[in-house]
Length: 271
Image (tube, rainbow, N blue to C red; front, top):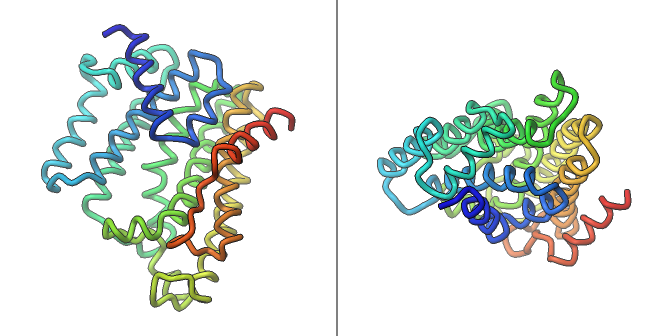
C-alpha cells in the first residue's frame, strides 16, 4: 500500500464516521487535511475498541497494541498515514498515547465524582486530539496554543457528553458528574425540570470552555483558523439545538443536518 492510498483510506473513514471533522477539514490544504484525517482515524480505532463488544481483556490488549503501533513499522492504512503525518508535522506521540489511556479508562471507570475528575478524562479523549492537531495547524504561538487546543478539545467533549447521555447510559456509563447530579436533584434520566436545570448548567460550562479554547484562532493561518472555527460552530449548533429541544437528548436528534452544517461552513468563510 502506498502512502497516498493510506491517506485516501483515512479520509474515507473520516467522511463516513466523523461528519463534524469531515466538514471542518474540507477547508484545509491537502497535506493538512490528510494529516488531521490520520489523527482522527487513530482516535476512531481507539473509540471503536473501547465501545465494542469484545471482552474487557480483549479490549485492553487491543488498545495496548494500538499504543505499541505508535513505535512500530506501519502495518495498515491508519498506521501508515499516521506515521507519515507525524514525520511531516511533528505530531507528539504523548498526545496519541493519551487517547489510548482514555480508552483504557473507559474500561474501568463508568462514573465521575466531580468535574475535576471528568476533566481529567476529557483531557485524554479529546484534549489530546487538540494537542495532536496543533502542529498540523501550525500555530505561531508555541507558548499558549497547546493550552488553548487542550481547552477546545475539552469543550467539544463536554458537548458530546451532553448530547450522548442516553447513548452512554446504554453502555453503562454516566459522564455527568455525580456531585452535580445530586446538587440538581436529578433522580432519573429524562427531560424533567431537574435534568433541564443540570443540562443548562453544563451548557454554560461548555460555552465558557469553548470561548477559552477559541483563543487558538488568533495564532493560526486563515485556512487553519477556518477549520477550527467550523468545528466549533458545528458543536455550538448542536448545543443550541439541545437547548431548543428543552435538553430532551433521549428522543430528539440534536445532530445538525447536512444543509445546516454547510451553512456553518459558509458563515465561517464569510465571517
